[in-house]
Structures are given as structure tokens and as C-alpha cells.
Image (cartoon, rainbow, N blue to C red; front, side):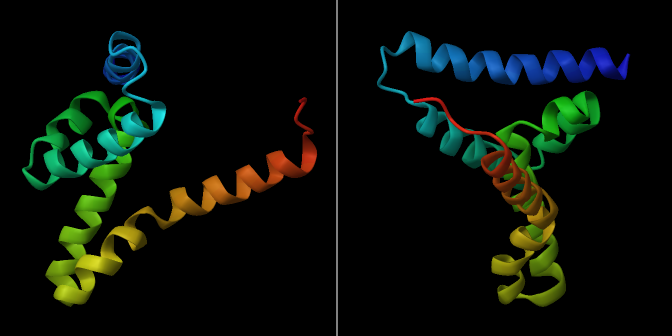
Length: 118
């Protein structure tokens, strides 16, 4: 059942972003969706509304970009509780460091092993 919920939640999040781009005749670009999802994820997380979605959808809610915003917000909240104002700035990066590192390493490896066709 958890696999189905992850698929549905993740799929719904992706469909919303795709519909936003398709229905606005190119005024909403992939960059807008990227920034919007991260911002919305962080905002909903700060309000305590994103965690129930994570509890319901698991990886379907944490892997999309809104999950990255959720991780940043939770890291900033936890960092502020532990380190005060400085923790607000460092907590988000600490919470998402593994994902950021994986993206850099795998992006580099893809660039080394594969040649783009132009």
C-alpha cells in the first residue's frame, strides 16, 4: 500500500507542475516550477502541513522538489532550535547535504562517462 501511495502522491505533484507549464503557454517555465516547488514545500513545512503528506506518501512526497524545500525548512527549524540565529542559515544546508552531494557526484560522473550529442 505504501508503494501505491508514494506513486500517487509523487505522480500528482509531477502532474501539477506539468499542467502549470502546459496550460500557461510557456509563461511558466521549468525554472519557475523548480523554484515554486521548493518555496511551496518550505512554506508548507514551516506551517506543519507538509509532514502529513510525507507520512502518507513517503518517498513520493520527499523525492520531488517540494520535498527538498521541506528538508531545507525542517533543517532550518532544527538548526534554529539548536544554534539560534546562525542555525537558521546552516541548518537547511546540513539537513540536505547528502542530497546535494549526491547530485554533484552523480552529475559529475554522468558528465565524465557520457558525451552529449549536439
